Length: 234
Image (cartoon, rainbow, N blue to C red; front, side, top):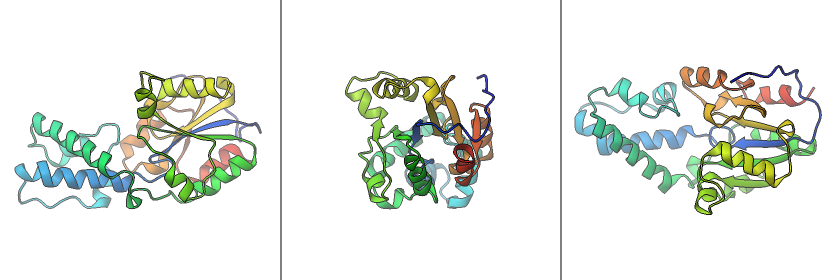
């Protein structure tokens, strides 16, 4: 990816701001750790019956959200390839069964105030999530968004066939916006598109390697929520 030379703050404009949900607005650490606990009980303990579970802090420091088996390969190297597949299946099922629950939907500190300031500046705010979120928690926290798009829902409806980059193209078409009018904010290196200003949300990532991988794939990084203000506002 060729990074754009960008002067900050960004020019005042009615930006279409496309925000990732997990680890950008809503904390994903609790649900990720819940997936680990479920995997530990149902898979890992078969091979490591006398091992204690990693703590939330230890797991978070080692968990790389885009290389999901990495933490298991480090701490539980005797797991077989078949067991790692089972870990993935158990984790995904736990996520599907639990991601709507309140304890797995903690708002990251300051994101509501930041989005309110964007709205006051005239920006369009769109949430793009891989899950089938219905916006309950955005409403619960009083976060004013113009729309919420689910990649899973869009695929089921036949709107798209691929992943988030295709969904982003669809969103631009829906709002009749060009690349130059859009900004993406998220934590996944694969979700950013050349030509659109991309902001890497590092604050949801506990793993140093994940933050490093993100920095290599975005135009601007925000180590803290507070840094987003300096990107958009003088």
